Image (cartoon, rainbow, N blue to C red):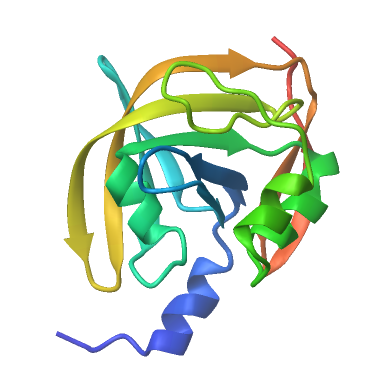
Length: 164
C-alpha cells in the first residue's frame, strides 16, 4: 500500500467544502466552544450527527466531561465568530462576543445561526489525533436564514440556501 503524504492529503481535503459550525458545551466540566467543519449527519432514526474533535483542543476536557454539545451551524454573517472560536482567545472572550440561549442540554445556542443541533454524546471513537463524537440530537432550532458559511480551499465562502 502506498503511503499518503500528509501535506498531499491536507491539500486534497481543502477541496472538500464543508459547513462551518461552532460547537459549544456547558456543565460541571465547564463552558467551552470551538469552530468545526468536520460535522455530518449519521442517521435520522434516531437523529444522530458526528463531530470530529482534536484531543489537543482546549475545549476537549469540557466537551467530554459534560457529555453534551450544541452544533451551531453558522450563517454567512457569523464568519467573525468562527475566527474567534477557532483562535487562541479565552473562553470568556469567545462567549462575550454574542448573546447565547439554551435548549434541552444546557449547551450554549447561538441566536441567528442557520440551525442549532442540541445533542447528548452517545459514543466516542478515537481515530489518530481526533475523537469522533457520535451525538444524539435531542432538540433543534431552525432559523429562516438563507446565507450559510462554508469553508473551501482554505477560505470562507457564503452559500445561498433555501429558506424552507
